[in-house]
Image 1: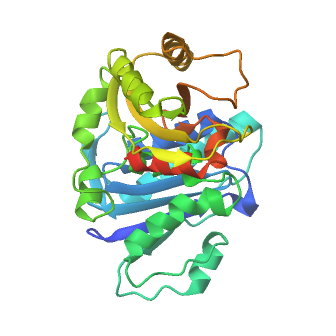
Image 2: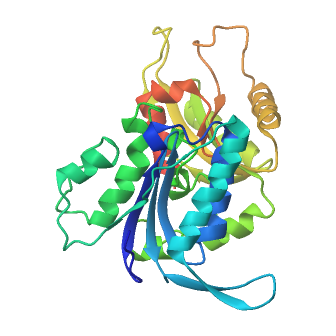
Length: 333
């Protein structure tokens, strides 16, 4: 594995003989902490994805060696190669103890592929990497293409329906659904992988006082325009409203003999926990005269449901309602 300063790389490894690497959520989080501790002195993370039996990192190398102070206070030069080895060895020891086994956890050699437009990436590279071939668009750089490939890995492997549903990748950070600490957001903006108006600094300061970010689905087919406007006015007095989507007209589901619905979504910040927010939304519906004696598919003056909670899809209707996906995607950034 040859790595040069000032270049972008796709770094990856997998379990020896396809051995499982991560057995629990705690394992994934522990590995991420190790990544930050051992690799951030050398590189900027552009994207990452941890899969059950392999991992992908897209990085920009800032330097290939780093001076540390040892226990005897003498400065010592440590290379990036050595730090990658420390990361994998220390994690291996943890899993060996946890799962009571001996031997190699990772394949012997960690791979690093440079992501520069001048090189030719053969289809065999993508196939042999982890079973997925990527067709590189002429409109995209290898960096952009590789980031997309890394984020789509859980979808390609059938682990989730949508990339944002996989907790253990940087895709939620790209969408603004989570305040991840690993990515170099300034460099992502510079490379055009995030919009210029993206402000991670403000997101960090906001997260110091606001605990949760949520997207709420909105629906009404009784005096919809007035009721949605009234609801948003009430909601703004209880939480911080960040964005409101455009409202879409949709056909009723379940009971078709009723007026069309107006649907939208609102992104908020709140210190309330999920169950507390559910109760607040229910109280707003009651305050506005929601009739709960009718079928849940019947006419409603206002209908409010939590769809996204801190980057996680929590409403199954998201997967079957095209209008809901469109509303969410409009305000997710």
